[in-house]
Image (cartoon, rainbow, N blue to C red):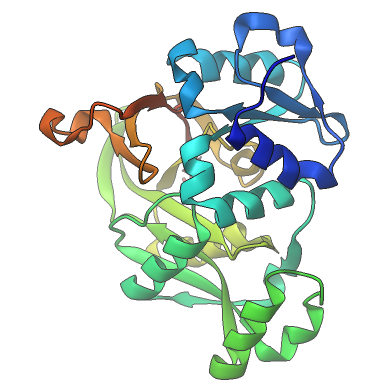
Length: 295
């Protein structure tokens, strides 16, 4: 009998509301357990830090490709991400099973937000840290739509508190770069990057990213917008539904994790003298690059 790591036990306990099964057909090709939920065509790959010596940088891309060929989406869940961003991870896992407060974007108001507002939201509601952005937008749900919030949603208390104090609640954000002149196909295009998008924890703003993109396009009139989808969590199909074209896959990144703090550092940015001997080398699956052309 294979002994579960503590991390694997925690995730299995959290997912006990769903009936899953392991994927034994993958054999020894992928040494970390892969939980499969056939009714969702969803697989969750659990990667414990103590098993990283069994993995190579292309492990995750191979697994994603094997399952994608069967129409199965995979989430690569690392132990350090589970511990460092547990609330965000759990919110996203619940959403993957359709457990989320759905908010129609047509009920929200879109407007620019400032840097502190973006950073506070991203710190709580996104897996990655906020980065420098030139343009920042938010979707706000007015208090008069408080009635759509479900009593049993974990988000309801936080949203109603915001509405009571401010008369509205911030439910999604998007950030964009400044414009750059890009030469492509012999022509110069004014190109921008969609840097980050995030929903409020345990919420899905239906049509939210589309509304934010339209506000940005109306104001800035870009020739195109580029963005990346994290292959650890996304197959990128949601971008294709918004008119983005899948351009290429970027290579996996290498990181070092401090297991005492669960902090993750880019390998190429880390000075060797700052790295502990017990730190663990990890990888991601790389990204999908997308481009939305306006002209």
